[in-house]
Amino acid sequence: MWDDAFPSFLIGLREGLEAGLIVSVLVATLVRSDQRGRLPHVWTGVAAAIGLSMSFGAVLTFTAANLPGKSQEAFGGTLSLVAVVFVTAMVFWMRRSARTFSGEIKQKVTAALGMGAGVLIATSFLAVGREGLETALFLWTTAQAAGSSSGPLAGAAVGLLLAAALCWGLYRRVLHINLTRFFSITGAVLIVIAAGVLGYGMRDLQEATVIPGGTSYAFDLSAHLDPASWYVTVVQGTLNLTPQMTWLQVGVYGSYLAIVMTLFVRGVRGADPAKR
Image (cartoon, rainbow, N blue to C red; front, side, top):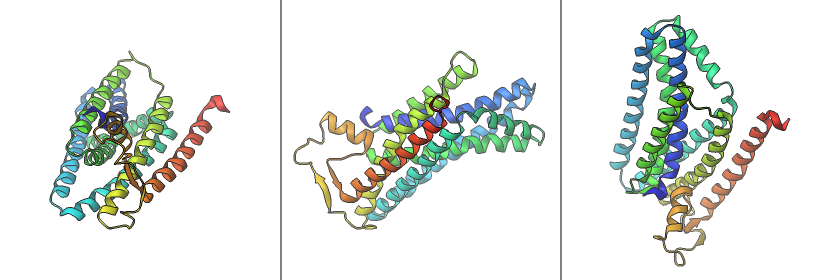
C-alpha cells in the first residue's frame, strides 16, 4: 500500500502547507489587528473551500465510474494532463513567491478588512479553494494510477496531517522552516512525479485510441521483471514507470523532465542570493 502513497503524501504535504500557511497568516493578521470577532468569516471561507474540493473529487469519481471503457480511459488521460499543467504552474509560482508569500496574503487581508465580511470570506475561500482543487485533481489521477490500492488516500491523509502540524508549529512560533528551500526541494521532486503522471496519461489516451502508437513499445521488460516484486512496485508507485512503455510515453516523460527541470533549477539558482 505504502509504495504508491509517496506521490499523494508529497502533494498533500505541500498543498496542505500552502493552504495552512494562508490560513495561519489570515488568522494572525486578524488577531494582531484586534479583529478576533471576524475569525468566523475566515473559517466559513475555509470550510466552503474544503467542501468544494471534496465535491469536486466526488464528481470526478462519479463521472469516471459511469463512463464506458474507452471513454473512461480518455477521461482519465485528459485529467492527468490537466493535473500536470496545474502542478507545473503551482511549482513555478511557489518558487517565485516563497519569499513574498506572507506579505502578499497580509496585504489582501488588510484590504479585505475594510470591505465587509463577504470580502473576507471570499479571500479565504479563494486562497484555500485553489489549493484544494489542485489537490483533489492530482490525488484523483494518482488514485486512478494505483487502481484499487488505498495507498494514495493514506498518503494524502498523512501528508495533510503533517502539514497541519507544521502550520500549527509555525503559527505558535515553535518551528522555523526555510520555505524557499522547502518549496525548491519539493518542487523538484514533484516535477519528477508529474513526468510520470504525464506518461501515464498518455498511455490512457493511447488505450482509448485518442492518439496512436499504443502498440509501439520502446521497451517491454514484463517477461523479465516480476510485477509483484518490491522494486517494480516501488518504482511504478512513485514514478509511474512501468516494465512496458510506448515510445510516446518515454518521449514525453524524458522531454518534460529535461525541459521543466532545467527551467526550474535555473530559476532556483537565479533566485538564490548566495549564487549571485
